[in-house]
Length: 305
Image (cartoon, rainbow, N blue to C red; front, side, top):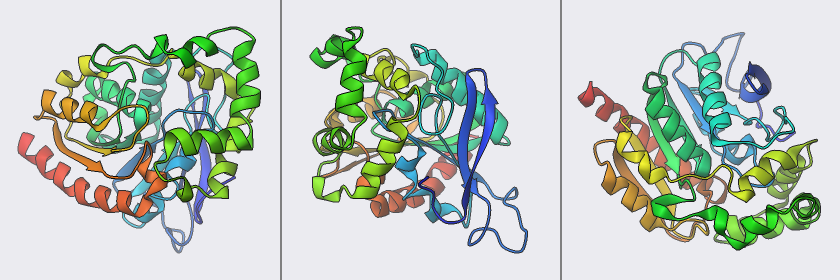
């Protein structure tokens, strides 16, 4: 298991099964038997893709553990959480993300989320605004935004073929070479930023029993939607970070989101020479931006209140 020092695995039950999360539980973050219940909570939520898990944020969240109570889940169907054998739908994640926040957090919290999951978090924040204090989102996209339809793409159509889909997963995704290829070609702008631990962590998640069900639902486009239809309803103070080299969605998509709802989306920051996951590719820069944005979003919240 790839955990930073001083963090441990815990879990809660959701309507779709047990959901694992990681939180600080010992030195160097908690000393002399102290707990962290008095600290404000930061929730870090990973995106989707073959082998995705809370590892995606593990180079970022320890930087905040001295000041915040950190909660970083593996979503249902990913990482070490349960993997129900089912076709997943957007509503599954809207429901379980809300259930998870209800069980692990006291009151409104700041949530930091990535890619398609970040788009889902926007929808949860619209439906349940009392759960959220602020949002910091890296490359949030529904992957069918502004009328696009990812499910009609060539790759999505191939993966929709029964039997072939599992063959492609077992030979092309859930292998060390398959994961490295995806990271190099789709996720990172600079392949030299990929190191063996990243590949190993993604492989561990991708080879969990039934891991193919959530991954294939994602690749088929079953979890995609048009985020632009929901952005106007967002009221939570939000910052967006967008890698300019993201293979799935261009920064122009994010800029259009910000223009739709400037009352909620207070900050839009693009990063040159960065891909889909700046939290893995440039963790120190991501940490610096989160540190900058958290108090700014809190001040906006105070003005709104």
